[in-house]
Image 1: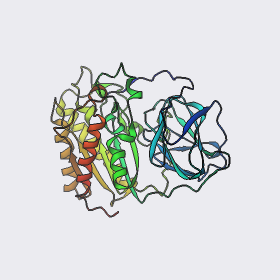
Image 2 (image 1 turned 45 degrees about the horizontal axis):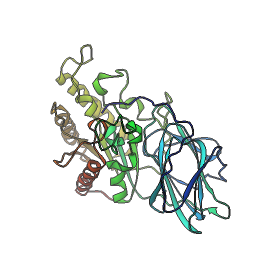
Image 3 (image 1 turned 135 degrees about the vertical axis):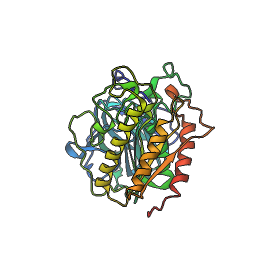
Image 4 (image 1 turned 30 degrees about the vertical axis):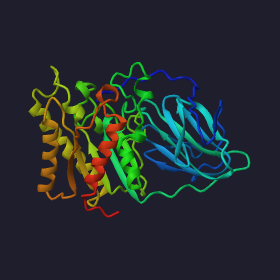
Length: 374
C-alpha cells in the first residue's frame, strides 16, 4: 500500500546463488553487445537508448533471448534493482544491484539455450539500462524469440507490483527490507500471463491511488500522473507505444491507497463520500483514456479487494463498471477478489508469494468467463 524509500545502492555487489545449470561471474566493465538490436524480445515498457540498448523503470520488465554455446553475458547498468536470470526456463541466479557490469552465465552444455532476465523490483526514482546479450567465445546470439500473440496489461499499485511478496513475514526490516523481498515476476499478473501464454506489462507504482495516495501523501500527484510515461523518473516523459502492443485484456487495480487509510485534516475531501465521488469521476476519465488508446474491442477488467476499514473501494469500483455498462460500454467488467486462504505475509501486510498464486488462480477463472478472442 505504501511507498518505500530509496535505498542506498550497493556498489557493484552481486548476489550469486548456486546454479545447477552453470556458473555466474561478473565483469567490472560491461562488454559491448554485438549488434543487440533485434536480438532480444522485450516484455514491458522501455525507452530506446544508444547502440540498441534500452532504459526502463516499471517493475517486471523482462528481456528474452536465445543463444548457442556454453555461456552468455548480460550487459547491465543498474545500481538500484534486483534481477532474476533464467536459463532454459529455470532461475539460476539473482543479481542484486549489479551496477555497470556484464554478468556471465557459463559452464552450460554446448547447445542452443534460452535466456531471460527479469527486473524484480520497483525503481520509480532511477532508470536501469539493458545493453543486450553477449555470446561466450565460440558461441552466437541467435534471433530473438517470437512475441506472444496474447497480451495483457496490468495497471495497479503495490499489490500488482509484488511489493514484499517474498518476505514470509510482515515486518521485513530484519530480513533485507522491501527490495530484497520483492519479486514482480512472481506477482499475480506475471503468473497469470505465463499461465495463459501471454506477453504482459506490469504498470504498477506502490503507494499511488486513482486520486489519493497512501495516507494522503504527495497530494499533487497520483497514479494518473505517471501512467503515460516509459521512464517514471523523467517528468513529462511519454511512452511511445509500438503498434505491436494491443492488449486483449487490461486489468486495472487502483483504489487500495485511495481508501485504506482515514482522511487527514486538510485533505481535499472532507468525507469519504466526497472522496468516493472524486474517485469515480477520475476512474471514468481514466477508462476513457484506455478506450481511446486501445479501442472498443479490448476488454477492461476493473478489480477490487475488500478492505478492513471500509466498503467504499469495492462499492465505488463496482458502481463505475455498472455505469459504464449503462452507457453502452459492455466490455468493461468487474472483478473483486478475496480468499480465506490469503495469509498476507508479505512486507507490511501485503500478499505473499502464496497469496499471489491464489489471486492469479482467481483471475484466470474470471478471465475464462470473458468473451475473449485470442
